Image (cartoon, rainbow, N blue to C red; front, side, top):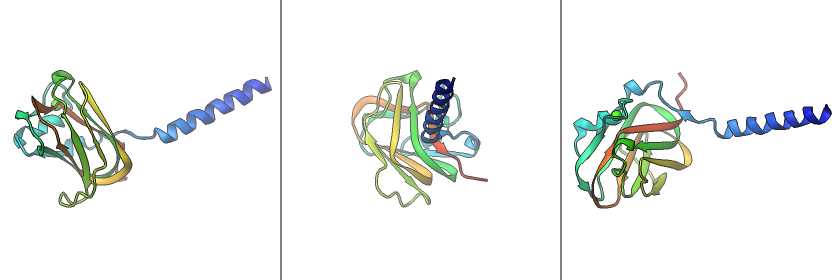
Length: 161
Ligand SMILES: [Ca+2]
């Protein structure tokens, strides 16, 4: 009996600590207030944040280094991870990427993540959880495919109201 209690207490402690580490959720509450733009096809950028995985923003040209996409969350959120979902155009992930955050849309500091995109979903975990309003993804590679984003998903903690 005692052992069972100790075990279940241990188990709950473990689960609590996992939850504490993993306390970051997808930030969706104010997604309707988000704005997006891009170096190419800026009018289509809103399709990357419309909650519809079937619609997308795309460069409409082959991927080339320096193309960028900027998300304005209209609030300062604490962000730990983003996912660039292209499941419906699975080969349109960025060949390479750098991700930055900013509070004013002008000063971007140093990259919070760099890497190469993967088919379907590119999961980008930041080097540290960062507070900011804007997220910029710069494409750093070159390939024949368009760069697309069907849905730009943000994880962390939303700003307190
Ligand atoms: Ca979409």
